[in-house]
Amino acid sequence: MKTVKGNLSEILNGIPEGIKLVAVSKTMPPEVVQEAYEAGQRIFGENKVQDLIMKHPLLPPDIQWHFIGHLQTNKIKFIAPFVDMVESVDSLKLLKELDKEAFKCGRVIKCLLQFHIATEETKFGLDVPEGEALLESEEFKSLKNIQIAGVMGMATYTENEQHVRQEFRELKRIFQLFKYKYFPSDAGFSEISMGMSGDYPIAIEEGSTMVRIGTAIFGTRQI
Ligand SMILES: *Cc1c(COP(=O)(O)O)cnc(C)c1O
Image (cartoon, rainbow, N blue to C red; front, side, top):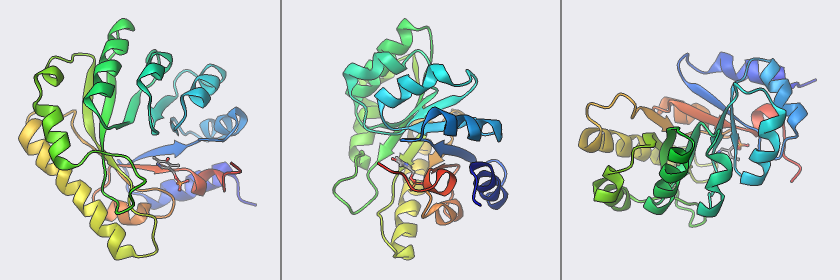
């Protein structure tokens, strides 16, 4: 029988050391998250504020919670006290609000800029000129309580491996461009979050530093 623990160790055995695994626990009940925690997993990804604030107090305090979904500015205050990283930043407005709420908590929140690399229209994210405009703005430069830790992207959902590979390659290229232009001496700008259950081996071949895996750990989601 497939267990969360078994799935986790299988995945961890197959990915090179140093690549971070975000266990995407969205829709999974706290007991199941606890099971993964007991198997040694510490980074978990959630995509709904409501679920995150429900689970957080029920689970061990050393979990690093990553927010990976679409975030509304009016809900940031609920997760700012504890969220480790917001992987899905796609506007200056969001960054400013994250900064404001992190300041109130005396914290620095790590953020990834989400880029739109897929051909699917439905997916969120910045394009390169939008990312550049954000990082070049005076408003951005004044923010002290957020730290840009890298980039995130989702590839198109397709069987076409070459297509997916090209999109991951594009995200790596964006990372390198932004590193060179905006963060040349900032070791904190280091993450390329790409790869999910169906495509993470390709993402790793293309330079992923952080994979976000749900179904392959927890099984198919019911909702
Ligand atoms: C759901 C989700 C994942 C994980 O997807 P799986 O296919 O279940 O591994 C990764 N990233 C984001 C942004 C997600 O919403």
